[in-house]
Image 1: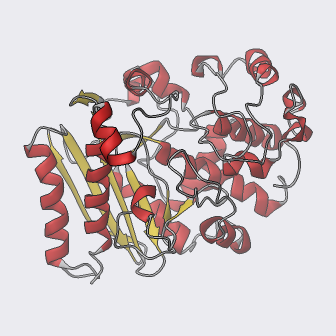
Image 2: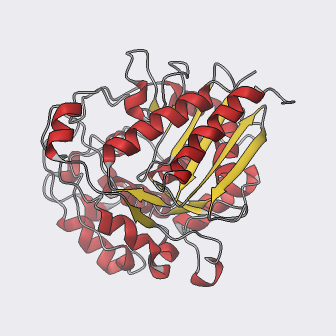
Length: 372
């Protein structure tokens, strides 16, 4: 294949994804490979049109973080300062010590803080929510994934320092300069016709299966439940633009975004800030499986400890690869060693988490081998 991809490797990637469609494990999927600043390959499989978009879940997080990076480069935000210096309502219940960096690193101590997305546009309710939150542990002392709470704070920080809606700021400051027209955070109901509905498939893994594979009988209880994920089928929730997981996109735009993180030809970010965000690991606290988080200020790095596949990267990327996966098996990363970026999206919510993880490893591994 011209342009720096290996024909046979791309064919193997598509074939592996097609297995999941043919087996009934996924209703549809979409993938894209980019290199040298351009999308070189894309495909949509299953019951979806080529111009479909998908809810990308936590693959949204780097987009929101990238808006924060822009503000860091301009000096409008400082990672070392406390959140309450920008958001006074946050200085309650021990949260007055939480720094902007801790929020970016998921070490801030409030992973389960509640927030009804439909309350976001009510400033009074929003402030009340922030004031009511409590820390589960001392900020900066451990890692626990903040599925949505941290990015509500990042959204608030963006709005406090810019005076602009965080969704509008992201669009103006990042998406438009990069020419990303298919990614959106906050999609009005009248513009959701191309978003594939989320579909639950399969049955949950049994305690015995979890014990054999992971040494635990059950997964930790989090807010990322099947019901919570399926709620993104609601037009009014998609319209909010949940900053920790409500982005909507096709695979090509996500792959283009990661190309920009490799080669910021548009000059969106300060070079030092971008280099830090894409390459400097600042959180190595272990997750619930004992795997180091390997987090930068907004991304995850594959690492050289043999556990990149447990971070959503498969087994064939370089240790310097960076990205962020999403619930349901969404994959997004770039590899500085090859110049590849890759995105895989699906609307199938596989209830069997072990099968989902194995699928992610297999597909990401094949994608990482496509560089000619």
